[in-house]
Length: 396
Image (cartoon, rainbow, N blue to C red; front, side, top):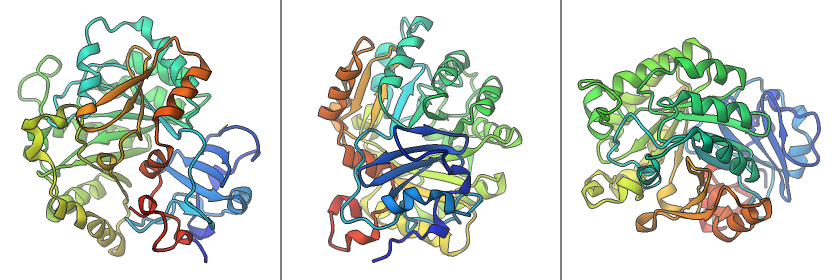
């Protein structure tokens, strides 16, 4: 049976590597890594992974599509080729690096709060090389520069970007609530993909769940207005940009999401990630329960995304459900220690330190991280060849 994605819908031609053997290959267009099932490719333009069978991975130079595949919603597959079983990578795909514990916002659902609050005091530039060392020891293809918010401490973010750029593709996450200007030259120089958080088309619902921290921003500042300005500046600087939205009870209805989609089209944004609220950090607190989206709304979410695809939306949309996938996320905190996201009341669990050896880091993530759940977070949809009654987790 043919896979859902044909070569014409495959990775862009800019991904074509110089060689297809050995370890990860880092290029201007993306990163490539051989796997037992074939290989993985990551596109810097789309901020997206592809899993390929052996034949497709070896034939990557034959792909002729010059840009990301045509927009396709929930039904778009990240799998190219034929798979006898669910493809699970041997090593992590992504490592998240918290370059600072400070953030200009106090988001009511913040899933990283439990990894920021305890480590703000005493944050030192002496820890930057520890962050880099731990991140380099995690054999991931992509490093996400996050926090806190890198926009608060651009000097720290730039240091980590410059150190990791040769070994991994890079993504930078920000609220946009601040001056993105100091970060743009380094992002351009190292092909960093920018992700800006925005939860609603209008200011009121966005600012309700994403209020400012008055220690960093003056009273009256709108996180919504700040995010829009950051998106516009990034677009003018020709920095590849994704908008990411946390789906909560405040924006779960189709009409609200469609309004936000239309705003993204007007802004020229072509990549949109919908992250279901995670029961972790501040989001796990009792007072945040009313922010959690309903099961009915989440069940309808794929249909909303498919509707956009069928109507010819120019925006690539993906949905992630980390709320259903504990032990799927790997993090390095602002001191250089390694953590796993257990989810729920367990929160983040330390699995390694900045002094750990390469073998200790590998042993830690293999003992803790569910690589199948990790892959499910970053690969869209199961390969069609698994059949309708294949592995349940791969179908969700």
